[in-house]
Length: 124
Image 1 (tube, rainbow, N blue to C red):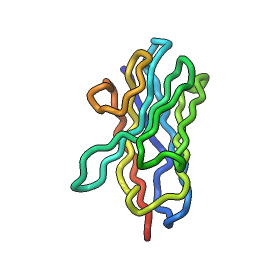
Image 2 (image 1 turned 180 degrees about the vertical axis):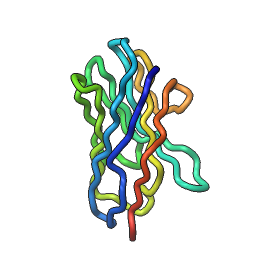
Image 3 (image 1 turned 180 degrees about the horizontal axis):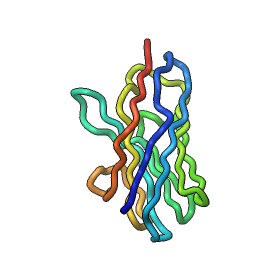
Image 4 (image 1 turned 120 degrees about the vertical axis):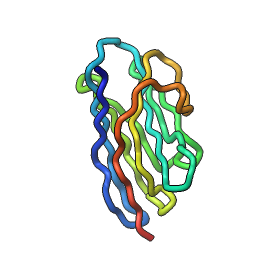
């Protein structure tokens, strides 16, 4: 059974930084994409970023480009999301997602597995 466990969320002031981690386990396929999505109360779910295990290629949503960086440690099956210059509008529950294959997309239906999420709160 595929499991995705997020960690690293918390409360930070505007302009601060956080690093989220997503530990993936329970699968045997070699090629996969891990993504991050976020959802704030009353707002639609938003694709933040994703990374391919095969070549490390990445994709970012427009609202986080230049501020967030996604990276991976394939030996540990762990993906990180470094979030800098945080803004109050970044406040949301951040979910880690996984799909088998190569395609980079920030579309929720693309992903088969979802973690429970970790709360990120940015105070003004």
